[in-house]
Image (cartoon, rainbow, N blue to C red; front, side, top):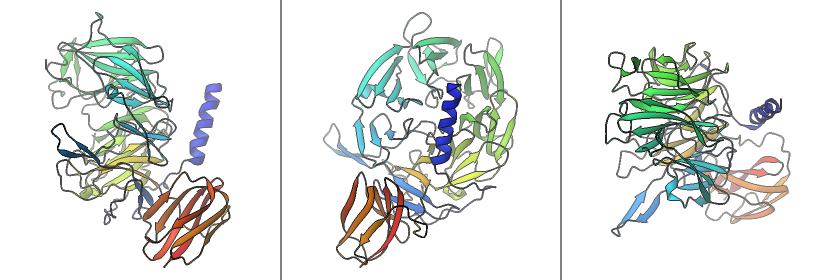
Length: 506
């Protein structure tokens, strides 16, 4: 009963306070508008081409350094992948690679992850302070952001107690279950592949299943016959996507007389084969349908172009989006674990609208538009690879913002897209704020009844030109000498709500 009550409270919180674009059905292909100017780090632009305006904020910047030869270099750090969570459990922090942690409200660096041996690492789904790391040598680590400390809490070994040559999560596309209870890892044991079910709560191996000869390539760091292995969000299933370039119905991987290809589902506790949900696997992720059944959502299914979902219990397949915009050039994220029933789709190809949408996991075709990614998508690094936040109200994606073609290194940044808060001042204001003089020349004074936390300043086209954060004051003076002449909209986040005001700068 306590667990049910807790779940209902969490759901009420997200339904009540998370801001989502309006539902629109069916999907519409909206051509890419002219790209706005590339926003500065921490600044935003508005995509007004969608049914609901979407705010796009840049959250990474180029990193300049000097290499071992003394030559200056530049690196464009971005988030990792559509199936790797960017935000922590309560969305107060975000992580770029296994490198740095940032404040999700101010976009300022909180921590340089000093333990370089954490790569690769993943946010806990339940503890906002915890990062898990799964090392190739079999070590399992916990890193606590608040104290910047790391503990090695376990080590994966083979059945004989010896070290694996490699241990990988996924590899690359796996995840922990939503309760931080179980994870599925793969271990290289000679030419064989072990699937290892590990209990993160009790720090012990639950089950180990060997696929003889599945690694095949004696020097390879990835299994020859497998694309990825992952636990499902509930922890009840293990899903294996077999490498379709090496396996098929005509040429399967055979294990003890059992043919393996496509996407197959196993019982997580004993790795007993359950069913094959599709003969051909593609870019996809594991989530929940609106009816509560766990599903794989992927591009390219039983009707080819489009987005499809397949129930892990083998009870059926559903066409989610049937449109030429959604072929195979894109990615799918179901990292919105606190908003089940939706998948977040990247349409990577600008020639096919280049949109970012959330789609409801039923047969209604209901979508929400999260704007365009504006990426030239001329290199793998510039592929948008959008991933959803835990409560699904934001997505993080990569883009060069139309500055292509490909360069070395590829120019690319990470951005956050979310529903833009209305800038209209016609609504009744609940907090009294005075802004003067108006019109203004050199400076603007602001007086408020409630504490002002953040101020966002937009020009008349909706582009954010300045933001002030963590103010915690009722009185502030803003230097306006460097602003171009024109009408501006000031949006104030106060302790008592959001207020907007217009002011003319001359």
